[in-house]
Image (cartoon, rainbow, N blue to C red; front, side):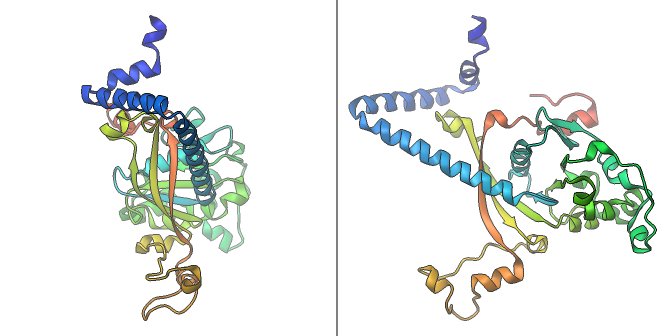
Length: 312
C-alpha cells in the first residue's frame, strides 16, 4: 500500500480532474484497441517516437551550443525564460554552479556581488592606467559557471549611478571572466533593456528571447506521453544589439529554393548573407525537456521576501 501511495503515476492520476482522466484513459484504450486490430501500427508508433527523440536531442544540442558564454535570456512573464535557463543549467557538465535561485541539486546559492567583487579593488581604471592590484584568487570560482536569475531585481537600469558604486569591478570582471575563471555568466530578465546597461552590454556572446512554452495546459497534462514533456520556442541572437532592436530571423519572401534566396530578390529585400552581416546570426529554436527535470520554484522570491514558502 505504501508503494502504491508513493507511485508517481498514481499521484499524477490523483491530480487530474475527472474529464482529464476520461481523456487520459480514453486515449490509452483507443491505442490498445487500434494496435490489436492493426499490430503493424505499433512499429509505426515506435518509429515515430524514435524520430521525435532524435529531433528533440538535435534541438537541445543546438540550444546548448548557442547558449554558451556570457549571455542573456529574456522574455515576457510566462514565456519560458526560466525553462530555458533550467535546460541550460541541467546541461552544465560541471559538478556545481553558482546561482541566486536553486535550480537543481548542483545549485550553490551565493550572493552574486561576492563574484563581482572578487577582483576588488580593481576597476577598469586600474587596467587603463596599468595599475592593476594583485589580489588573492577566489579559487572556488575556477571553472564554475554563474547563473543570475531575474537580474533586474538586483541591477535595474534606472539605478545606474548607484550601481557604478555598488559594482565598481563588474565591467572589468565580466570582460575577462573567461581569462580569470575559465567560466561564464548567464543572466535572465523579462525586458532586455531593464537590467543595468553596463551589465547587459557585457553579456556579449549571445541573447535568447523566450517566445512561448507548451506542456502545462490541462489538456496537455491529460495526454499520455505528452504529459511528461514540455517545449519552449525561442529566438537566438548572435548580436545582442539585434535582440534589443527586436529583429526577426531572415525569411526570403517568395523564394522557392536556395538558388533564388541567394539571387536577386524584389526591391527592398536583402539577401540572407547581407541581413546577417548587418545583424548577426538570428535563428528560431526550440528545446524539449522532461517535466521531472524542472525542479526550480517559480515562486522562490516569496520565501525570500516573506520568509515562508508560497502556498500551493
